[in-house]
Amino acid sequence: KRLALGSILAGYVISNNIPTTNIQILTMPLYLKITALVVSILGFLIALELNNLTLKYYMSKIKPFSMFSTSLGFFPSILHRMIPLKSLDPSFKVSLGLLDLIWLEKSIPKSNSLIHMFTSKMLTNQKGMIKLYFLSFMITITLVTTIYIISPEWFQ
Image 1 (tube, rainbow, N blue to C red):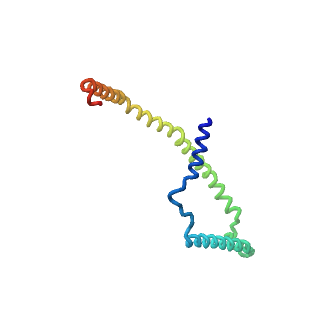
Image 2 (cartoon, helix red, strand yellow):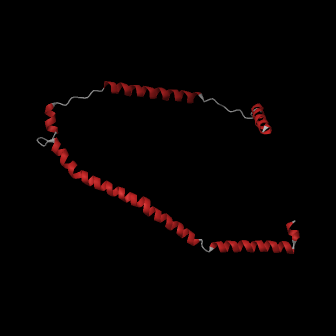
Image 3 (cartoon, rainbow, N blue to C red):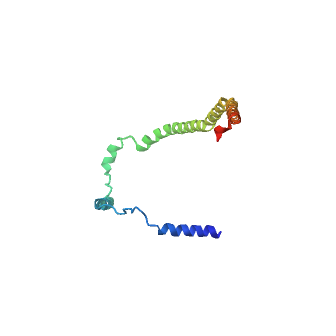
């Protein structure tokens, strides 16, 4: 325990007292400093201008006579919005349900079966390979052993 603490302390003292051979330059050139300063000032000025524009912005009031011409004459806006909404909303819900069903089917059962099929193909392809690898290993070991027995001076 004392040896470990002493080693850590000695390493810290030694590494702090060895001067570095290459001194790093930790300053930026003047043009880079000025560029950073200009970009920061421009960003601040743009943000200030956008803030001033939003404070001075006001909504223009709609005149009652322009409402009649923009609401498609005598066609009421409530009826104009209600019929498309009532006809398109069920189809939207059906398409969302089908999309969810397709993604659910693709993400869980089909991907699961594809993964299992891929792994089973990989396992069946390597069925007889272990015998080949073991046999080549055994041949190599027997050759090395016989060469060592016949002429041991090769291994010295």
